[in-house]
Length: 514
Image 1 (cartoon, rainbow, N blue to C red):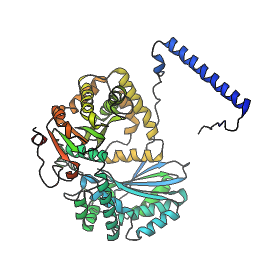
Image 2: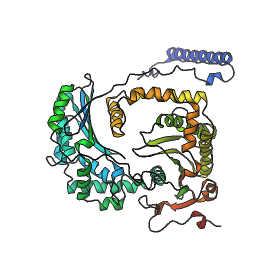
Image 3: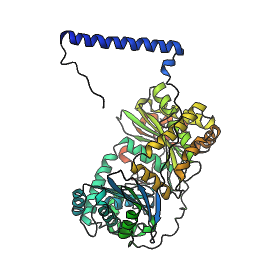
Image 4: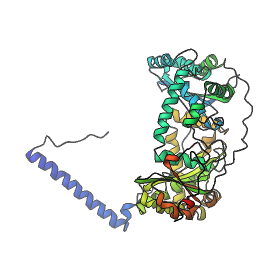
């Protein structure tokens, strides 16, 4: 961090000389800036100098060992690191929540650190605290994660604690009640958060009819319905060594890693996992529509425009990563330029690919003043149409490629980043050398491929548009984008098929015939 120079102690001539010196520097800089602008032509002072493309990076490939019980162990060795961290990934998450039991995977994950058959939650916390370590767990859509981190000389403790958490969770009734109360309380707060509502609603509407079309946190009703038997059944079905991968990071040798894994995980038994089958309802069937969630008095409106996407293992992934950068990624971001820089409608605008095991979504988002919501949607749709109908420019293509290749090195700098990317390959059944070829895949993307991929996915009749805010006056303007229905935030139920509690939703047009 740079030093701060204060002039509070200077008096009289000394302070005057300091002020004169700074004035001279400012004047010199202004003269220099003017000369640069004159030499470079009009407006060139606003154009940054051309940067060379990022250099190729050498990405580590973890050592892989498979134990006799099927547990895959990845070692990412860095002897200079003072820590040893273990990340366990069970290849089942919220997409495996049973019908009527949304939130089960996260419920299970939330209790992994809250006691085992051998240690209570308090004893487990005291053990990890005494070692100066940390532990955590959570569930995504396709996976459940648990991790323990300790100093390198306590590596055996990390293996012992993590194996106990994974194999012998207690699911104590008192901890279940605490988790249930805390989660329901948080959901009540989140229901009033337009960002959360828009994010959850657009995904559920886009992925309707699939295992990804429910709130992963659950709802008040489903959390109340989940029993200890539900948690034990989920655990018994998916927490098996052959369905789990363990990443070991830090100051540990291959010999130490293998010996500790065999000692603490080798006795873990479970029925052989059958091959993971593609669910029959993997194909999203979005209902082309505009959903308005009315929140009277809201000053801003959250906006989401979503389209069905691709699974993570799709060969189209590198092409769509480039396309997304042009539309709304950190590199080019046409949405940001149009909505913020040019029109002044929003502070931020972006888009993101969400890719899961079986399917995915492509979602653009922004928020704006409620009075400008319809205009912002119009501009967003214009940029989406532009991407699908015309090739990106060569500078846009190169900017997107340079960002994706350059950012890759930053993602792999921390050991946890290496572990996350390595486990991702196992989860989605991709080759372990994938990241070594990723940069060349990005570099090989062509302009025409970007346009074709965008045209195939960004189809107007497949989109779902969600607005959350003071939207009662937007019904007429939004009809140009598709059938409109409006739901009061008070009646919103993210766990209901039609998103409205207590009754079937009537078309917004009937409510606003006048």
